[in-house]
Image (cartoon, rainbow, N blue to C red; front, side):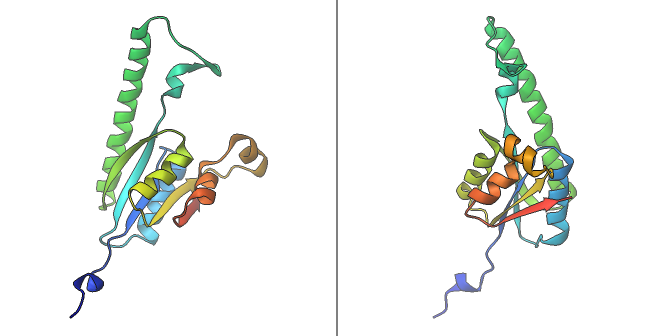
Length: 158
């Protein structure tokens, strides 16, 4: 008696970190042109970060009027909606099966957690090419993912 599941090809799940930069666009293009296989399911991730709404000049700001905060969040939601639409269009343009994941929190840890939750086979991310000193002080999402993910990681440098 043969096990039919052993003859089936497992569908790969690929998580691509997208932040709207040319570096992440390059990483997606590289993945599609170099290692994409028919049947892959691609998860384009985008991190939602509302801290920009609550900060001004490096200081946390809580407006006295809740409607001001509500309007700021509403504006940010509109921007995020546009980004999600663009990412969905990229999936269509590249003719790949997938979906957009909207994540929250710190980018690196959120991406690593999503890869685990979604049972991704590997992660593809871009790299801004920060020098050692800048990366030490500013941190690097790709560096974080590379060092904390139990999944294989492709870092695409332009």
